[in-house]
Image (cartoon, rainbow, N blue to C red):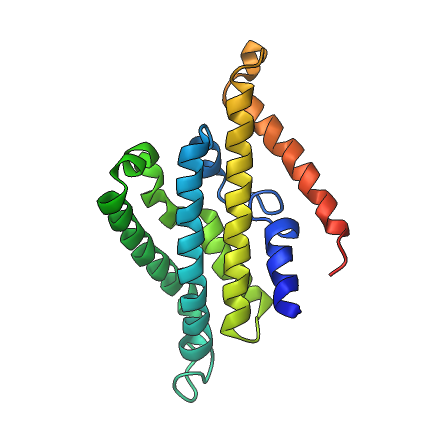
Length: 198
């Protein structure tokens, strides 16, 4: 039951985009079409599913005080280690997408390697550290929920932006201006999930 609560909270209540506004750069840049949004969203889910559990293991079994060697506290290395794990996994994802989906690789362009510096990826690892999950299973469920939440946010935004392209938007708001307004309205809509009692 606790895992289900973590999963639902990470998707709707603690949504990376709408609650913390993490990962906005790639979110706004790639959310112009649903096809590219689905590709980037799937990549983010995969990267989160791998990096958060690995970072959980690093944090709890190597970096914490007295975890690996008695009397040694390596927790000051957590940022560097988290970044190294994220960069390695993103590099792997980039190579796989380039090999098996070259069209998607071309559409995502620079934003695929930029997952490595996506605030949402690092934020998930830092939130995992802050929440102090009791098991790796809870951390993995959190990572999956955070990834799905980011995926939902970017696909919804892309669908809305595709429809808005046929609308009569005032000239000063075309492009990123209307995207910011839509993003703010979606964040307000997602705030309604805070009323869910879990």
